[in-house]
Length: 239
Image (cartoon, rainbow, N blue to C red; front, side, top):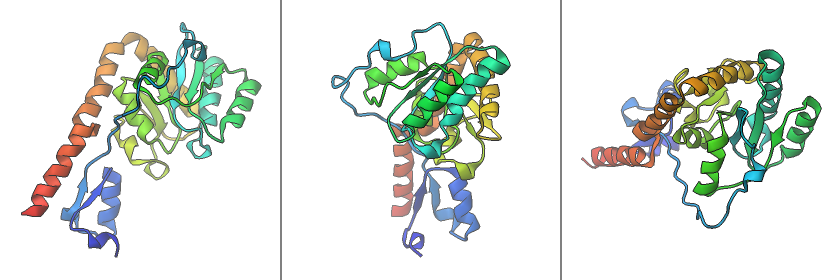
């Protein structure tokens, strides 16, 4: 009843549109505007010392994200261990953010011998540019939201689970095999396999992959693209 009060319904993803239609909401009144990410943080307010980041020379797997249990971030740490064990790839794990999952992540990394960097939360463009300059591939096992858009905008591919019912709308920005990988299960083995592929590809196809990621954001998931969709809906509804 609540949704039917709207003349036009604006939603972030195609899966949401399909769900709305399946429940009987009029198809011609559901508009997918997608989401966008723009940081307005003051770049002069903070900096991220390089000593808190991997020093370079090894691939870096991780994410810029709140350390929440529902994200499955423990699988990111475990996947780095599997990269070494199953693929012979020595990688660092970098997770930028704060939250209640931090102690568990530290314990898992210590137990598995994973080189884990947890520098805390940073928001400025200057700090995030430095972070993504180190990141080889972003991994959010499930409930991948704005981190997807932020990572792709920086030219970094994203690995996450393919099941839309374990996801946030922004995961739809990932083109499987082009700007990231949608794995069948949000587990360390599946993630490690996908990461091993992207680590190799980022070494061989860096410029093309970065371009693929960034054009996806510009064309469909940018603030400008989203604003244009809002305007289109408003003009149509005003007729």
